[in-house]
Length: 353
Image (cartoon, rainbow, N blue to C red; front, top):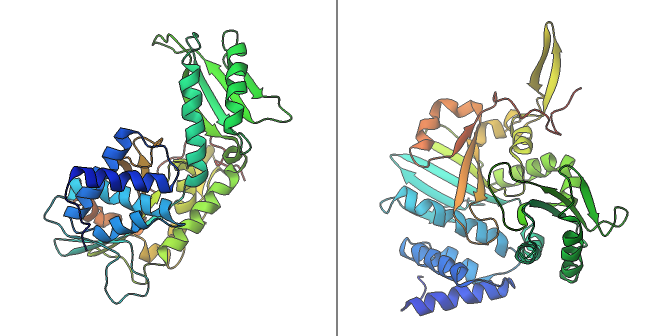
């Protein structure tokens, strides 16, 4: 049943109430973006997904990922194609979305990899740090990585700490707040190569705990993909395309490649080294090499807000590479990544046996 929307004010109120449930201090732009997406989904027959988001619950961040995805692809696929949310076919576990085009059925299961509840709290802290350091008249960039135990009460002391070191700090030197043994934040400063900055600017952010858990990222991705693949108890082919779309703002492509294609390593061969992959990737395993056509990575254009269009890349299962045109006729991708693409040099996960 469609939402009872009679005015733009109704939409704005619905969006505002959703943000209140997640304790997110939404800007007017945030509220307008979400209200526009709700209206779009309502018009395209996806009111069930709107209701799911309004109802909230423990899995609201998963629903945000689904809502973002639908809002991102609806303008792309156009008004003529029908898209079903949790289709009502006689399926034990229906995938999240079903789209039909030119006698091809696209089944899409969304998986949210990000720890968004914790990330939402840290994002608010980072935004406040960013606002305050703009008052520091030092023309440098700052990288700031926060630990789990960093709280809003620490912001004022951290900004004071930053102010004390920003002017004299040299590139490549790491600073720990308040000190290395009890670190709550790790900082690095650097000067821009070409542009001129009038104040200290936040260049990048990170998560100290995520850095410590880098080795686990590959297994986390594997487990998430396997869980999502449980929605498909049929094989993919040129007319049946099973896709897993993962909200992966916090995960590097190298970890995703290792999880899907197999762990990259540098082998020894006559005449020199050569990179290879172990046969431990999801696409190498049964039944996933037959059921998963490929994996779409979803990264928000603006990672600081719950609502943002997705940038999409595609990781192709080599079993179905001859049928990629059937997928790209539906969705465009920023990049299509294949099994034989070389991993980045210097990656922590590019191993020597």
